[in-house]
Structures are given as structure tokens and as C-alpha cells.
Image 1: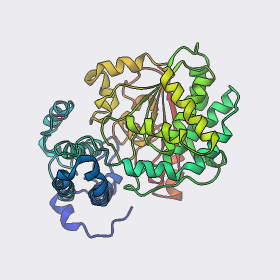
Image 2 (image 1 turned 180 degrees about the vertical axis):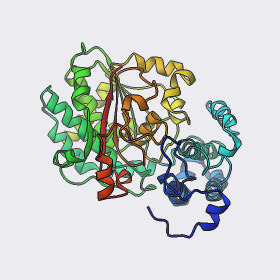
Image 3 (image 1 turned 90 degrees about the vertical axis):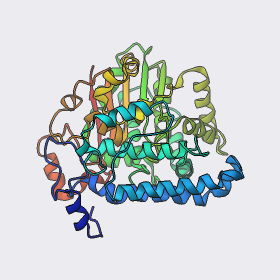
Image 4 (image 1 turned 135 degrees about the vertical axis):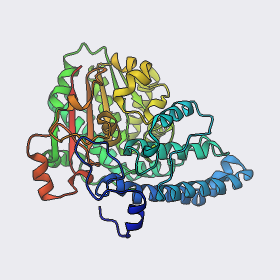
Length: 438
């Protein structure tokens, strides 16, 4: 995580502190030795450059969709994205939104409550500033003729296509399975490691899953730092099977596919009557699932020439038609800046819905950050403590570690990992499956 350029002038001008994030402090890019600093100096500017370039690359396709008059919108939108990139690199202010989206008031009220000295990209809490950037990109598109465009769809669909071999291997390995703890735990772990294919971490560069997925699950067991899979199994197996499992999705592509495989097992084995998928309302963190990604993936599977995948796709479409699988209503809370412990106050209807579930399964790194609140907890503090009262139902998190925050580790483990690799928290090589009972 070393920067090539000399940032001395920038650091002095913007009060950057040459240290890691202190304990029990909000994560923020003002700490030079943090992943947040690296994110705002390199990763997010690279992401914005990719978005602008994709508009030029896909210009003909966009003109075919939006009409020849959209040529000016394409150019102006690309220009605005690059201006946003420049603003981040200059540590610009988090300004109020001017679009007409339904969450605009919520965002602006949140921004107004931030202290002025915490309203720039590098001074604000990392979670707030990064979410703001993705919401700002959406606003730029919504104020043009390109409103409604998922400007990450090309990358997400390419990622799915690159995963076909892995998808087929998983499908063949799961067509007949037993209803027992061992099988369920194996599918949870498959789902966990599917989270390594995260385009936001690579600024949009493709990651192709390779090798036998179930062999990989076994090989990576030593990298699973917390394994609460048995407690998750018990929370479902001990129920009457009439409940709902809520999956708060992370990435499209191969990870969404493994979500579907896990959900298929839950329905087939009578562990719940419904699995509900919570997607994002706007394009988010490059690879996050939107409603169209869900439907596209089912059709993509159904259209495959291999009968195993095509029959699976048709089966999952039937599950959706029959209400066994369900897309949750569009919910802007998932693309708000708020940590989850504030859900009951900010979006009580969503909290109430989750409280009726048998299990809520949070996928991926960003959801983990929102569960913990982008706060430098000590790595041995309990998961329950770090949730800060957020306990709508039985909940679990499946997360490959790609940011410098973690909790619930055994004493001394992180020290041993740091001794082996000081950047172990940023590589996606280690994972967590953590559970909290209501």
C-alpha cells in the first residue's frame, strides 16, 4: 500500500497525520498509513477515470439507447466525473445534492449535521466520504439524459461471463446434496470466498475465479479467522422452516451466483419458506447487485448451452415467480451514509422487516464496515459489542477482509498475522463468518 508520488505538499496543506488510525477512532483518510488514505489518493480516482473512459468506449451503444441528441450529455457527464476526480484529489468539500432523487433530503440532512471541519473527503469518516462519492456519481448521471443508466453494468456482466467455468463446476457439485450441517457449512464457506471477486477493490479490473471451488474452500479453511457456521446452521435447522432469510447482497457476478446456490439449498431443504434478496437502489461500489443484475443473472444462466446451468437458471426463475425467492422493495437506506446501528431510528420500517426474519445474512466488506461503523475497534472486541445494539434478528456476516477494521479475533491472532504480512487486512486472503443471536 505504498504510494509512488510524493504527497508532502498535499499532506501539509490538508493536515494529514503520518500515522495509522488511532484506537477507538473513526477511520478517515486523514491518517496517512490507513487504507482510507490510499483509497482516496489512488483507488477512487482510478475508479472515476474508468467510469469516464467507459462512456467514450461505449458511446455508440449509449447513442443507440438514448438517441443522437445524447452526445452532449455523454461528453458533459464524462467531464463532470473527471471534475469530481479532481475535487477528491484536492480534498474538496462534501457539498449538498441538487438532484430530485427520493433520498436527496436524507443525504442533505445528514451532511448538514456533519461538523464543517469533517466535511471534506480526507477529514470525514471514510465510510461517509466513500458513500458520498458513489452517491455523487449517481447524481451526475441523474441530472443528464443518461438518468437510469447502470454505468457499471458492462463490468458486472463481463465478470459473470468470466466466471462461467467456476459456475458450472459449482452447479455440478451441488445438484444432489444432504440436509446436514456439513453441507450447509460448506456452502456458507463457498459463499464467503465468492466475495473475493470484488471489482471495487481492484478499481474495476476483472478478477476471474479459478480452480475447483470446493477444493478452494478446503484449502482456505486455515484462513477463516472466525467460523460461526455451526451456530448459523442451528439458527435455521432448529426453526420450523416457515421463516424468511434476508440476504443483504454485495457483489454481482460470481458472488451473486453463490448467493443463489446457498438460497436454493435453504429452500430445497426446507430451512425457510422464502429467501429475500436486498439489492442496491443505485450503481454502487462498482460491482454491487442491483435489481437488474439479479434478473440478468437468472436469464444468463437459463440461456447457457450447458443443460446443468440452463436448468438451474430456469429453476431459480421459477422460485422467483413462485415467491420462494423475492427481491426486496427498493430501499435507499442501503446506499445511505448511515451505519446499521442507526437503522431503527433512520428507517424504522426496514428495521421492522428485518426483525421478522429468521436470519439476516450480510455479505461483504462494505456491509461489515456499516455493521461496525468504520471505527477502529480493538481486533479482540466482541462482534456483539461492535454492533452497538443493532440486533433486529439473528444475524451473520460473511466477509473476506479488505479493509483495516476487524473484531472478534482470538487474542494474539492479529499480531501473528501482522508479523507475517503487515498488509494482511487488505488482501482478501482472510475471511470471517460471524454470528450474533437476537
